[in-house]
Image (cartoon, rainbow, N blue to C red; front, top):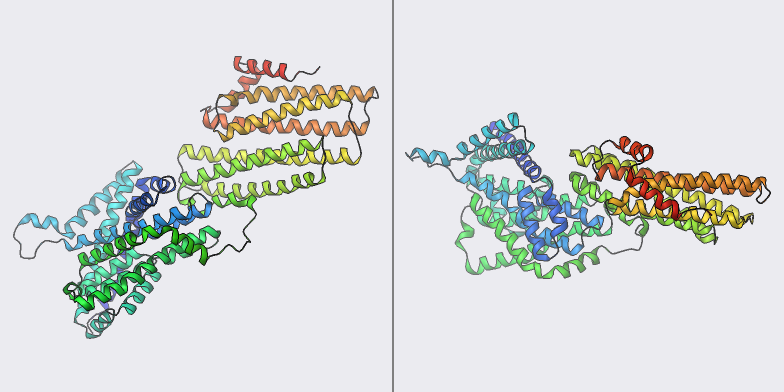
Length: 593
């Protein structure tokens, strides 16, 4: 038995160390980058060339083409990125993932056994891994800055990775003496068997980088030819699409389309280059193909294949887009367009707080505008009632309720992430503001009910009451527009107009109630009219209160007003000059005659 039980345990241990080290190093690199690389993918992939370069760079840093591709599926699923952009980035991701193989090639750099020069020992993998491990542990244990701790994680991950690689190579070195193993490896000289085996291995391991690393370790046996390495590598690139396909579960139409790009791209590359390489080798008999593979040659094969595939297929991005749209057709059963923007609340973005918060802001902005439009739709019913418009108000309220539910759930998940102080503050204010936008929509429904009651009971207010309600409605319309516009534009100095206007509306409501009581006592209005009038005023007053809450949240978040209670006391009790200026302005604008 060539491979002893001890060697099997060493192989399993080496594989575990290898996978752990690769994951730790990739995670550390991503954390040091501060999630900025993912944001670059989203914002700077405007052309195919930029997309390829960005996909290459980001993948080289985070050490995983599957992770990059999964991220891109999330962007496409949310509507943040077009399908054509995703194709270019995934092409680049294939090139970027080859960086891992070159890092592993450092294991080939070792001191010669017969060398007497002391400095050659410094080039050995053992020495480099030891230095990285020592420094990495020091950083992780004693560094106070998060960046240094993550750097230590990278260095320790690299050391573990190389140790695992060396252990796997040592454990499998004895297999070179096994005729059975040699026959098995020589069978992979067959293109179909080699590609199929490579695809299966990678589909199981869920990582092309890990598969390539194991192949490099196998090369220590001396029975892996460059021919077998070529076809196994091509298959491994196909198998790497498995985690990307799994990431599309639950995605929308375009998200599913983006997920199969990785598979189609590498499959087409395999279909093109496998017969070409096989045919040319038969015709010209390249000596290189018969030589034993090593870590360097495997890295070279991996890079050349992915680079060549990208160069050949890059001009056909448009055709790729048509192909995936043909394979996954629009069956016409996509969710209501009202809810499309909710796709931005993608679970994949939770790995990047900056992106997930930005998406939440966009969805909340859409929710705010829906509430705004529904309120104005309801107010219009008071003067021009229509059953269809009334039904629309009720339908839109259901949409807004769903927005509140999805946003609230998503934001709670964000709070569990590793957020900066500013990000935590922003998410907290979003959670509070959601309720105010939803309550404005609720009051829109209440107003629509009042409008329906007025229409069905054929009620009519006196000329004075109608004029007063029109003035109040105008003031409420302004405060809603003001608060929502400030939210959409991340607030400016006009946000300080909200509190004076809210207080003016409170006074208007009080005055209108007193005047209407007098009209009822004088017989100018009936009791039924009084109830309806009071309901309207109450809803208007509550809407203004919610606008005030929104303004307060924006001031605290964007104007660095840490003690918001002190601010409110100042503007309401002490009546600062700015407050009095705006209040006097509104007092004239919305004066009752």
